[in-house]
Every structure is written in structure tokens, then in C-alpha cells.
Amino acid sequence: MEMCNNQLMQRSNFWINETISITKLDQQFWYMACSKCHQATGVDYNEEFSCLYCKEKAVANPRCRLEVKLDDATGHLMATLFGDEAEKFLSCSAIKLMNETIEDGIKNIESFVKLSADKNFLIQVRAIKLDTPTEPML
Image (cartoon, rainbow, N blue to C red; front, side):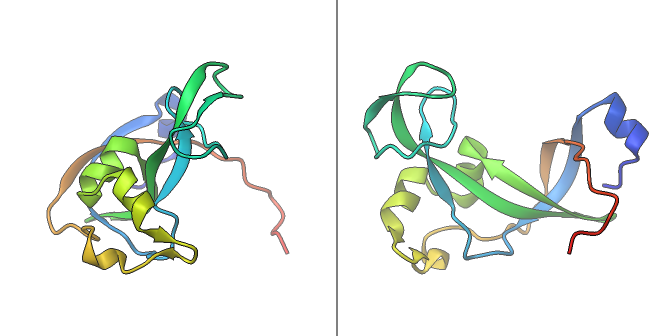
């Protein structure tokens, strides 16, 4: 999983063979999104609105998002799964996640989603180079 900067500059998509696990159970597993561009919105479920991002009329729908850890023989990588891929991994729809959410988050998520996999997945990862400050942040 280690990528040198030259590789990252030459391409941004990589195929890796990994196991996936969820290490943070208190994360937000879904967000309300534009049905056209999938950007987050504050609009209520199934409400029609004009999206500020794609400028289209759309409907607000829940969209699955989860932070995961990808592991292979060389190490691990933290990543975020979105949409259909996240739902497939969890074996649970974003609508079900939304319906199971209470004020403090999702109650007893272990009872209705698959939290980790003991099999390998072939995953396409899109790498993004972030500029980091040279001085440590205090």
C-alpha cells in the first residue's frame, strides 16, 4: 500500500486486494444527499429541492458513508466507502441505517449490519495528495 509521490503524481487510481474492517462504531453511517450529485444537504428525506451544487431539481435521499480500514500484507490504509459499495459491504441500505438512527447515533449497529469481513476484496482506490503543513500544528 505504500505509494511514493512519483506514483501518485502519475496516476490516482490503484487496485488493491484487501480485507475491510470498521474500527469506529460511533461514526455517522449515512448522510442526506442530493439524488443527482450526491452532495450533502440539510433538506429532509424525500423533499424536492434545487441543489446548490449541481443546480438541478432533486430529491433528498440518505446515502451510505463509512470509514473503514483496509488491510493487506504490507500494512493498512484508512479509507471511506460511499453509496452502493458501502451498502454492499454492510449488507444494509442507507434507508435502513437512517431509520435505525436515534439522537445519539445508531443504536446497536452490530445487530443489523456486517461490521468486518474475513474475506478479501479487490478494491479500486482513488488516491488524493493532500498538502500538509511543514510546521506541526499545535
